[in-house]
Image (cartoon, rainbow, N blue to C red; front, side):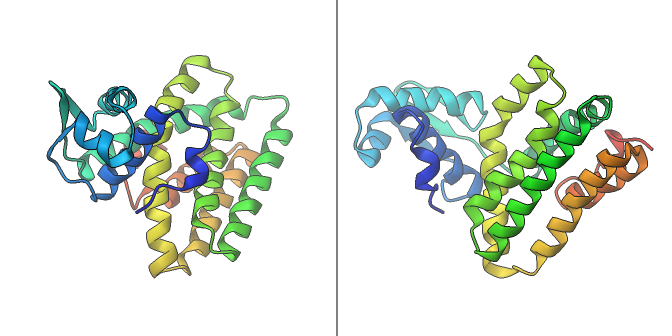
Amino acid sequence: MEYPKAWLKPLSKGEAIAATLRLDILSGDLEPQVITENQIATQFRVSRSPVRDAFKILSQDRLIRLERMGAEVLPFNETHKQELTDIRLMIESFAFTKVIQRNDLSKIIQKMYQSLEMMRVSVQFNDEERFTVEDLNFHELMVEACDHQYLMHLWQQMKPMMLCLIYISMHKRMQSNPQDFERILKNHKQFVEAIEAKDRLQMYDAFKANFTDINNNIGAFWAK
């Protein structure tokens, strides 16, 4: 898979290299192996300095282990994917309890519906890149509305990984099962309706509909 060029534009050289390698690792295009600074610098036609920056970023993502003059690419399997989703579920479960207490809840709901409509338009134009951005933005609206700086910091740390995983998933769906997007859009609508109704049981059902296919332990984070 190729990392979308539009997503690279606002990034520094080191961040852009990290973003490209991150997608390669998460998609399985870059398998566990030892990579060197010289090798990656040659691949991206840069000096070793931005490569070192990229390696530091990927090390923080737990995708590589730093070694002298290089790094070992670590495996990323279904267990690691579920662990990442575990943290996301904890964040979004907590976010729901905070969002429904907001006095300006109607404005947040309106923004989520607008994001949902942008997702729908992206499907119509087979735009998996835009869909991915809008999907993540949809969920981020709820997290931002918590007005919780440490929670948002954690979300931002996870965001590059989540962006890649969503993009990989949506790319596969767009290529092999575009009809499934109707289900995905319906599931996201459940999120907004649950927030609008301030209904915990509806939100639990929305979490199940949206995350059961990638996490088999929903109940641990959202007990009825």
